[in-house]
Image 1 (spheres, helix red, strand yellow):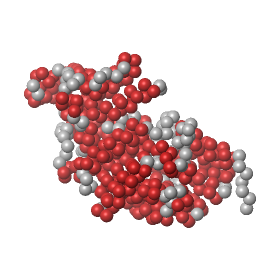
Image 2 (cartoon, one colour):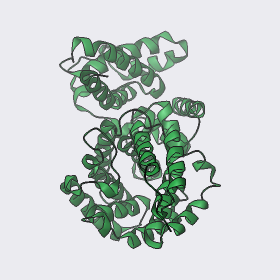
Image 3 (cartoon, helix red, strand yellow):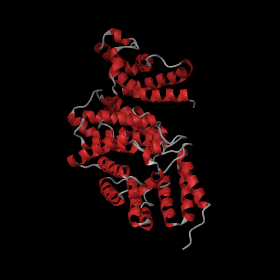
Length: 421
C-alpha cells in the first residue's frame, strides 16, 4: 500500500463513525445505516486514490451514504413503515440527499452518541463491545475475534445479532441520561481500551502500530472525560492511554524493528504526555473508587517515571498488579503479575506463577504466555528452553513486527553459548 492509499484509508477510518452517526440520527436505523456507510466507504476507497480527495471528504461520504440509505429504505417493503414515519417527521425536501456543505451534517460529530448507542444495556457486554469496535473503531471482524480470543465465525454471528437487537429494540439515537449513561459506562470504557490496545500493538499485519486507532481512542476518551470530569475511571483510562502512548516513538528502531521496554531510549519518550498522564491519575486515585484503569495507569506511571530500566520500582508494580488481579480475573493481568514477580523475587518464582496459567483456556495457544516464559528462562540462563519458547511465540503471533522480534531473540540466544554453572 502506497502513502496516498494509506492516507485515504486512515481518513476513511476516522470519518466512518461520524458518517454513521449522521445517518443513524436522521433515519433511526443503525443496521441499514451501517450498510449504506460501508457502500460509501467502498466508493471512496475506489475513487479517491485516483481522482484525489474531494474538498469536503466528510460531506462527500454523507451525501453518497445518504443516497444509498434512501434507496435501501425505499427498496425494502419491510422498512416502508419507517420511511413513512420519517417522512412525517421531516420536511419533504429532507428526503433528497443532503448537500455536501449542509450545516447539520458538516459540523456535528455524533461519534460519542454512537459509542453509547452501541453500548446499550439491551445488548450483552460482549456483543456491545464487539459492535462498537466494528462501528466506531473500524476494526475488522477478524481483528475483533483476535482481541476476544474467539473464532472469527463466532464473532461475526455476535456482531450480526447485536445489530439485529438494536434494529428491533427501538433504541433512540441520543445521548443517554445520567442513570442510563452510568449503566453503559463500563462497556464504553472497555471498548475504548480495546480500540487503543489494537492501535498500540496491531494484532495482525506488517505494522507494529495503527496510529489512527490509538489516536481515535484518545480523542474519544478525551471527549468522554470532558463530559464526565468526575468519573475517576474515565480519567484513569485517559491517563493509561497517554502514559502508554508516550513511549511510542522509542518502541521501534530505524528499520521498524521492535525494541523492548528495557532497551528503549527514554529520551525519546513524550515528556508532555507523561506529565499529563501522571497528573490525571494522581488526581483520580484519591477520589475513588479505584478501578482497573487507574491501577494500570499507576503501573504505567511507575515505568515512565523511572530514569532507567534499572531504577524501575518493581516492588510497587508487583503490589499494584496484585491489587489489579483481585479486581479483574484477567489472564493477561496474571501473566504480567508473574513477570513482575520475577523482577522482584527472581525468575524461578516468576516461572512458578506462569505455570499456574497453563490450564487457563483463554491463554491456550496464545503467544504472550510463551514469550513471557522465554524471557524468564533467558533470565535464568537456560538458553535452550528460552529459544524453544521464543520460537513457539513467534509461530503463534499474527503481528509481523512481534514475530520478527521473537525470532531474532531466539536466533541471538541460539548462537550464544550457554553460561556454565
